[in-house]
Length: 363
Ligand SMILES: Nc1ncnc2c1ncn2[C@@H]1O[C@H](COP(=O)(O)OP(=O)(O)OP(=O)(O)O)[C@@H](O)[C@H]1O
Ligand SMILES: [Mg+2]
Image (tube, rainbow, N blue to C red):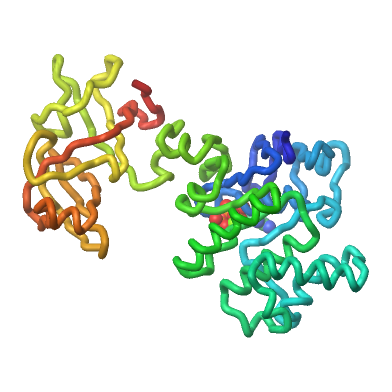
C-alpha cells in the first residue's frame, strides 16, 4: 500500500537544522501534497527523497526497498530510484529542442532510437505539446515550458512523481488549468504524486491527502483536504489554511462577553471553566446583515474586489474579515461604507484556549 516511507529523517546545514525527526508515508496511487511556509524544508525533503542529498540520519524506503540509510552506508543514486522529478525552477535545457529535452532521460537510460522517438512523442501528446517538438524553450511560453518539464519527468514512465512548486511561474488562469491537468494525468496514468507547495488553494484542489509543515520542519497534521480545512489540529494549521478571524471572549459569572464590550456571545458557550477564550472563524463562516440578531459591529474598511466585497468589521475592539458576493450585497442592501453599522451571524466556530492559543478545544 505504502510506496514511500520516510523514517526519522534528520538534516542540517552547518548549525541550521532543517529536519529533526521527520516521519511520513505516501500511499500508492495517491496525490499527496506537502504544504508549508517558505523556507520550512519542503525542497530539502524532495531532494532527500530523490537522492540528490543525503540525510544525517533516518531511512527512506521506495517501494519497500531501502534507498537511503546513512547508518548502514546506503545511498542509492537518483537515476536508480525510478522517480520523475520536476524541480521548483523547472529548468528545461535552453539549448535543446523540446524533443531533446524530453528524450534526455531516455538517452541516459539507453533506450533504442525507435522506442525513444515513440515514447517522446507519446509523452508530448499527453501534455498537449505534440506539434511543438522542434522548438527551443525560448520559443515557448512559460506554461509550455512547464509542460516540457512535466513531459521530461513523465518520459521514463515513473510510478512516482515529485513536483516542487511546478506552477508558481504561471499566471492565475494557466495555473488553474495546469493543476487540473496534473490531477487528470495522475489519475489516468495511475501514478503516485508528491506535490510540494505553499499555495493552500492548489493543495486543497488536487490532494487526496495532505500534510502541513511548520517553520521548524515539523509536520503538524496529515489528512484529507476536508479534514485539514474543517478540523485543524491546532491554531497553526487553522491560520495557515486561510484568513482566520478571532474573537476574544471573557466569562463574567454565567455570561460570556465579547472583547472589551458588553455583548453576549450568540453561540453555545465553550465547555470548560477557563475565564478567557478565543473563538476562531473563517471569513466564509461570518455572515453580514444590515440589521437583525447577532453581534453588532461597525464597518472599518470596505474593499470592492469585482465579484466580491471584502469587509473589515470592528466588534467591541476585535476586527473581523468577511466577504460577500457583490450581486448579493446589492440585492440585500449590503453595499456598506466605512462607519456603517451592521450585524454579524456565524455558521461555524472553533474554540481556542486563550492563554496559549496553542490548543483547539473541541466542543
Ligand atoms: N544547500 C543548502 N545549504 C544551506 N542551507 C540550505 C541549503 N538548502 C536549503 N537550505 C536551507 O534550508 C531551509 C529549507 O529550505 P527549502 O529550500 O527546503 O525551503 P522550502 O520549504 O522549499 O521553501 P520555498 O517554499 O521558499 O521553496 C532554508 O532555510 C534554506 O535556506
Ligand atoms: Mg522550495
